[in-house]
Image (tube, rainbow, N blue to C red; front, top):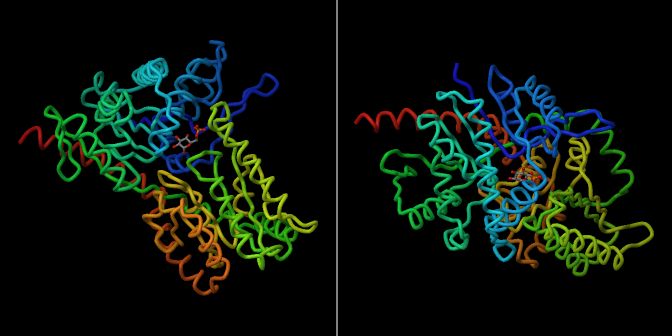
Length: 472
Ligand code: G6P
């Protein structure tokens, strides 16, 4: 029976070694929940890196056996590969370029060669597991070359690719020395998916101008074969977030946090530590808000959760220092014995804690400089039930295309961000609830299961259409 193979850089589980014993911690990530019920079915499989360097072959064997029971298969990466493929080309070349931070991008031939070699490594592992009639669904920017590598060996396979980060405009994409090779890698898929229509348009324009292939209604005709490009805005597991937020445990936690913050209005900020998230810009806007609206001193607290990420990469280390410094400066300037304007937490938290934070937040401040989708804003909305709450959302996040009832801002426009904070903190409850419930309706319907469903349906449709094109 044909099976589905999901491939992503990381497996939906984090491997850790404690006192010589392996532990496997399931990931709470959006993709992991969305595909959870699918990859565990029948012979389906998820292939990826287990999140830890393991060099001992016996240990590797044991891990493969353990993961096999959970329908997962590991790709082991060496320390050099982590440095050059993951931290290097993926996160110092592609990530900044695709997020319009090309001034941060490193162009280094050695990093590129390791990126090619690791994509080939994933390909070899998949080939050991795949049958020609299987469907292979590849995820994200770490594996841009994989579709074509697989296509060469399995010409008739059904191959999907989805990019979870933005695809930049042609003028930015063309800066990459390996732009042609990257596009050649992506067009090996039958269906290339993006979060937004704009990402899709940018990709088609680059394919046209760099590879010379035109397109019609999203179909790229490559001569020997055709592929479809389309947008699929990713949703969240709405019911899961709504249910957790409604649980007694979360309500209890919310009460404890609230008691500690007395009558404060809470503005919430949650992100991975990443320059694309606009954390320093957000802090400066909050500082200006405090300057312009002294009547809010001791009345509002910014609760800021920053989740550690990619801390071996230089730009991330620099950002950490900048954030620490800014928080210190603002708190130093405005704190009173009974009030700290910013409560800053640099660590990761379980979903129940996040849910309690979402519940108690009067305002969620989601202001990335650039974001493929952004799920935090969707999780906030899903956690609100019938409660009031206001979402301030950056126009540069893919989610802004769906959540038009949020207060949409340009994160570079500090005055607009300040004004939107004031508007949010003084918005009548009825208006808050009306906007929330409209956003909730849409997120409930276009949830993660819907996303998986329409992507898979479209992939099947592409295969049928390709067959009819070949015979006509
Ligand atoms: C983004 C990317 C994912 C990545 C995640 C965490 O959401 O689109 O591919 O897995 O960040 O980053 P990390 O580098 O820790 O895998």
